[in-house]
Amino acid sequence: MAIEITEFSDVSISVSPTGAASGNFGILGFLTTESGIPTTERNRAYTKLTDVGSDWATSSEVYKAAQAFYGATPTPNDFVVLSMYDTDQAAMISGGGHLSLTDLVALSPVDFSVEVDNNTLSSTSISLSGATSLDDVASALETALGGNTAVIIEYVDNRFVIKSPTTGGASDIKFPVGTVAEALGLAQHQAAIADRVAAETPVDALAANLATGVDFTAFDVHKDLRDNITGGVGETTLNIGQWAEAAKKIFVNTTNNLATLSSSITTDVASLLKSNTLRYTLTTFSKTASQYPSSAVFGRAASVNFGAAASTITLNLKQIGGVTAEDLTPAEFATLKSKHCSAVIQIGKSQTGYADSRMASGSFFDSVHGLLWLENRCEVDMFNLLYQSTTKVPFTQVGINLCKARLERSLEAAVRNGLAAPGYLPDGTYLPNGYIVEAVELADVPSSDKSNGVYVGLSFKMVGAGALHEIVVSGEFAE
Image (cartoon, rainbow, N blue to C red; front, side, top):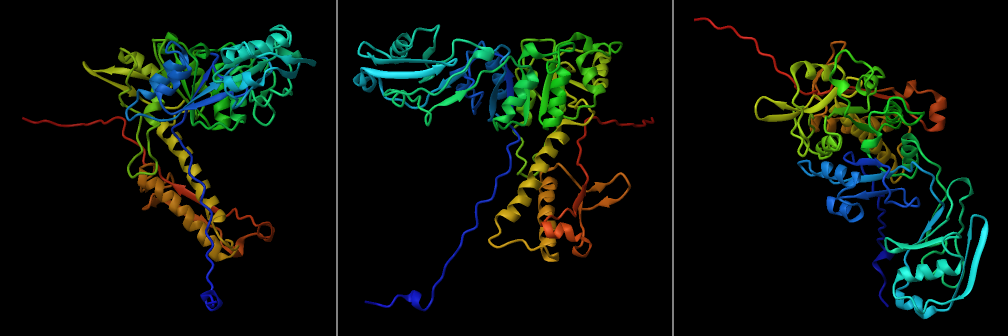
């Protein structure tokens, strides 16, 4: 037997883990009170309009908002429906994969037991032999357990669903047992259970959706939730904007209130949002209450590829398809601007455009959107520096220099895509690279920080590239 070469030369290669990916900053959430998603799921993501149409009628508000979003050019990708339950919801179980009708009928007779509202409902020798559809199977089980006043069993969206017949505090359900539970996809390891849901405010619903881990950068709301000034806690448009501020989610708000066009009125939603200097709320005025201009506007912004060169945009003067342009007087347009409210407007005789894309705080949308991306880029790059090291990043001057270099690389990406550029800081300092990174030297790091492995000495300053929104020219002419 030959001697292996590894007796003389043995090589072992380790592979670094794949780094975390940057976030997606083109996802629009849509908060709706329409039914269509079970409480076990709460939200559902889509990547094209046809997928939305397979779940929601074209007459639904969800579809109208999705149509506005996907109508943007270039076409965006990611649309997420966020459910809001404005009435009490029953506890329910939504099943997983199940046997075919033929196989279920072949199991007949079966036994089935489920606890609903603290009552154990059970039956043995349930006959499925007469079932000609999966709906018939659900009906046979429901009848055997006492009918829909005791439990509701349905076949919906290609799965079996069990619901409590009550809502509110008494509604409760446990996973079923019996010979057929697993065959129906309703066993504990297959199905999803949802506790009862009390009637929600918009803020309740947004928080509940966020708690599921769903990702979205911005969100629009069902038209019935617009222009709410006097509602209860968690119901008003201001409450929604304040939630967005805390959650760092962009609220693309629409107002249909004609009072927004009056300079003498300061109690409209746009004025209220401005007075609260909300950085993450963008308000768009529209006289057409049936449309979703804010979804269309974010659809245009959603296509920005922050990883490409010179890719960032300003929303100002962008054409927004599918939205009725407002025919405003100069005074009305000036009033909108003074309230930090934007609109798709008629310009001249034949042009339309969106103007002027200020958030309620006065910041421009492109800066807020871009800084969300930059924060994530810096976080991900720093994480990957630590995560992908096969040994460690030493807490030495060498390690600090590595952190500084990685941060500089993150900031350079912001200059490359056009978010930042060489320029002057407010104190007059010129930054030829568009940014400067400062790092506390190792000798100045507190020993307690080093003992805990925490370095807090990195900081940077950056100059935004901004965008031209207006051009003023002065000239002289002499004959």
